[in-house]
View 1 (cartoon, rainbow, N blue to C red):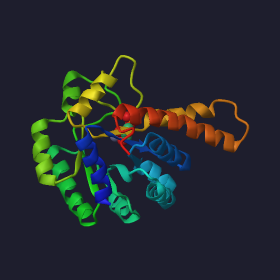
View 2 (cartoon, rainbow, N blue to C red; view 1 turned 30 degrees about the vertical axis):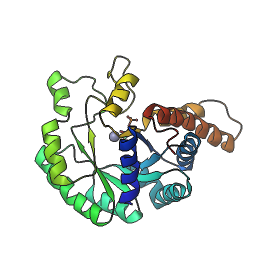
View 3 (spheres, rainbow, N blue to C red; view 1 turned 90 degrees about the horizontal axis):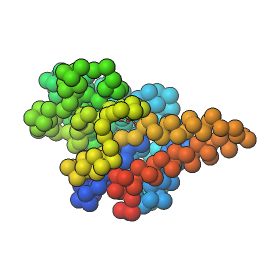
View 4 (cartoon, rainbow, N blue to C red; view 1 turned 90 degrees about the vertical axis):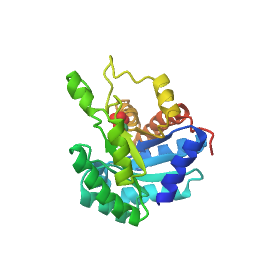
Length: 253
Ligand code: G3H
Ligand code: ZN
């Protein structure tokens, strides 16, 4: 519910740390997040991207919800980058604690109006809402300075957006990008990450690194399916545990 997600992020604000939101695709992914969070004594967010949801459907969501319920650390279940209104409403029906309304591809006013409308629906169902302002792209490769600047979140707009939409959390772009980082950038180093946490960033999404850890294990020779599954799980868990330490959420529960 709204309260689970809210509590996780409020506790993080009070404790001056951040929470990791990890994209999951299957049972191994879910287990790796839960067991890393348990071992680290840390809260975590299980998040499902719409493409993963279309693949795993209700069974994937049910597995997340059940794992979250039985974990002895706080876990929220979140829809990542919801762009389709019906898909977001369906996710609310499926029992997600929290949803992201990503209308960041739209002009500011349209992003605001659409986010506002869906937020009312989500809040009436007791679901936490994250929105996005500014545009998190694939990589900043090949962008002109103007194109790059345009993707950044405008703090003045952010203020209006938050007041008008009443969303609970906002994804911002300060030069962060999705996917595998090119060798020469973006210049987001771990000391900068600590800076972000100091300045109030409370949710960090991790997708690519956990996926690559999984896929890398598939390239190694393995005995059998269970061997593949447990190696993949261990590899993901290692990455996740490391992130929980960097975010400062380890040992909080
Ligand atoms: O929504 C997902 C994320 O923002 C994480 O993606 O691991 O490619 O940065 P990434
Ligand atoms: Zn994202």
